[in-house]
Image 1 (cartoon, helix red, strand yellow):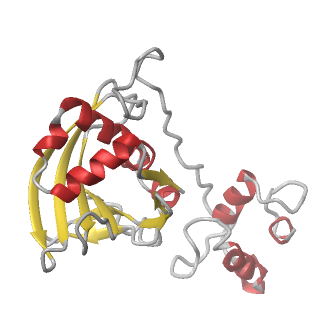
Image 2 (image 1 turned 45 degrees about the vertical axis):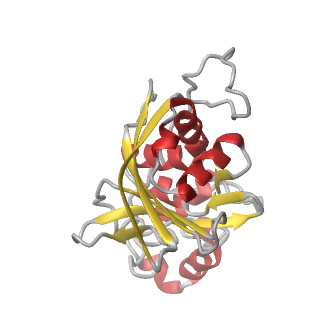
Amino acid sequence: MTLNGLGCDVGKPDGRPSERTREMALSCRTLPAAVAPRDLSVATVRSFLALYSDPTTAGLQRGTFIEPPTQVAVVSNVPNDAAAQAGLLVPVFKVHAYEGQTQKGGSDSTYVTDLDVKIDKSSGTPNFGLAVVVHSYNPGNIDSLEMFLNAPTKSAGKIASCAMGSIKYPDGTDHVAFRFDKSGDTWIVSNASCLISALPKKEAAVVRFVAEHFSDVAVGMVTDGSVNLLTFDVMRNLVGRVATGELKIAAR
């Protein structure tokens, strides 16, 4: 009702934020960039309400309509009758991934592996490089997990509000960063939706693939045997457990 009162076309209020509500909240007025959230969500709805309830907001210029985030189609390139290797998950995509550079640090508790990931018939998702960082303070355990896209991004400002969003490499370049939270046997990419909404189409496609199809990367590495070429035991452990479904990586 607050948005409609300002002349924004939200439709008949029914108490449920719709895609139209989102569009109007982000574009009805040119809100101050320093204080306006970048997206409408459960976490930011109170901030939008406060902004649009401020009497001075009515005098702001009308904003520019913001297109809804690009949806990246998921089209399987694995035949429906393809049989999974014994004990492995059935993949959606056929993926080949190989280890690039590696390093170890943090009092021998941090393991970093760069993966070169290639997707057969990717349906719009480009091949990409992924830095996987595992912190393991006790042998056999994965205490925390991080991932970064190796290609620099020009969108660090746009993803600054995405709970980590980006990380600056020593050479000064910015890289998309995935934030992981753990729940049971699942590592959840908690900033995936925010990154996908804010990034350009190709980067968004890669983020979606990592968040939703890392298990395909793991299955591909086990099937190809490239998992056995990984330098660190902890990485072989991670990939092997994800490939069998013992550990899961999922988007939120």
